[in-house]
Image 1 (cartoon, one colour):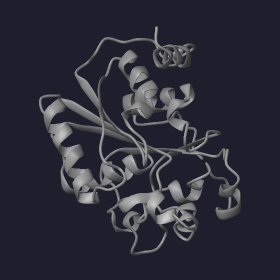
Image 2 (tube, one colour; image 1 turned 45 degrees about the horizontal axis):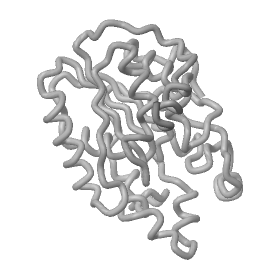
Image 3 (cartoon, rainbow, N blue to C red; image 1 turned 45 degrees about the vertical axis):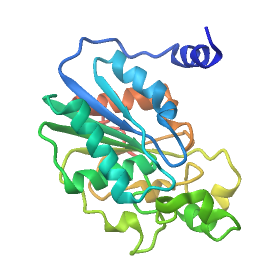
Amino acid sequence: MRLPSLLLSLALLGCETTPLPGEGEAVVVAHGLNRTRASMAILAQRLEWAGYRVESVGYDSRSASFTKQIETLAAAVDRCCADEPVIHFVGHSLGAIVIRGYLAETRPQGLGRVVLLAPPNQGSLFVEWLGEMPGGPEALGTVGATLGTDSTDLPATLPPPDYEMGIIAGSRSVQPIGPLAIPGPDDGIVSVEQARVEGVPMLVLPRSHYLIMNSRHTAEAVIRFLRTGSFGGATG
């Protein structure tokens, strides 16, 4: 067994999600900034074990425009899930914003529920800090640089959701800049407050921005919300 496959298998051990037969429901998964589909592999596997058909979408998170990112997601949905009776969405970080942008323009038939992981729904103060550093704009990329907290930045231009949506935010920072640049609990990139959308249920887990999608507790919460529309009464 190759090392990446071995690491994935070890990470998946201990998942308490009981495998269920597929019930005709698909989940479209979108990764975050500077990441690939591989970053969502553990969560995707847990969703498959829970009985969902999973489509993990890869898109150019650095140099493509926001419009192009939405088009890539839309093409993947049309290709994979046009005939599925229920289509859910799960996005991490920038992937969450791309999903919101897509759903603001397109409403697929059979839209189910949406879960956003560590989303900069109100922008990110860390992004603003990094954007002022040498090389920061290049590190953030075309769309990443627009994820600030100003009223003209991308997150503020998105309409509020008129579909079932839940948010899972992280409260553990593993890098030193987050606590300095971001007031209040944060995951190192996005604060708990900046992840919020008014009226949307939110669960806060002690996880970092970069690894929140790999947590067994995150997967269980995502599956619970997709099935019931609730995180079980636990909100942050």
